[in-house]
Amino acid sequence: MALPQRYVEKDFYTEDEYLRWEEDAPYKSEYVRGEIRAMSGGTDYHNAICMNIGSALVVALRGRGCLVMSPDMKVRTMDGVMRYPDVTVVCGPRQFHGRGRSVITNPLLVVEVLSDSTEGTDRGEKFLEYQAIPSLTDYLLVSQRTALVEHYARGQSDHWNYQAVRGLNSKLIIPSLSVTLTLADIYDQIDFGEADRD
Image (tube, rainbow, N blue to C red):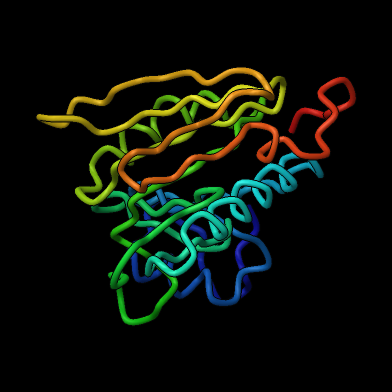
């Protein structure tokens, strides 16, 4: 990773150093326990699925005081970790980390669209981090290979309930938000036969 000239490469960066670096960095990076990790861009279908989900959530949550945010909004998952989820939902007043308005700390819903390069992290390291956010009630993992959305919902005693919703004729119900999404909407214009993996 090449840092802008005014920064010195080192093994550990503070959160403040990372946030200052992000202000003029030429690409997005996540912050993980002192390490700045550059992010690669997604494919056309990855981005289309993100937009489809975001658009469906905007319509479903309209007038309810909820804000649906794009992959450009950072989420602070725990001390020393900031991520860029593919879609984030916050209802009610937003809470921010630091002085600006670029890092949310109280999401209700986080969505990650799976790719070959990120699936392991999305299922493992990131999910463990997202579970540490007290406000988070729902985590969605969305496949690019087939019509499949995996839904983790926080239950009693912080137990996470799992449901897999499959097929374009299926509906994803998110009780905590009183929202129902159709997989046909999530995968609108997606041709699984030609989708590239990113």
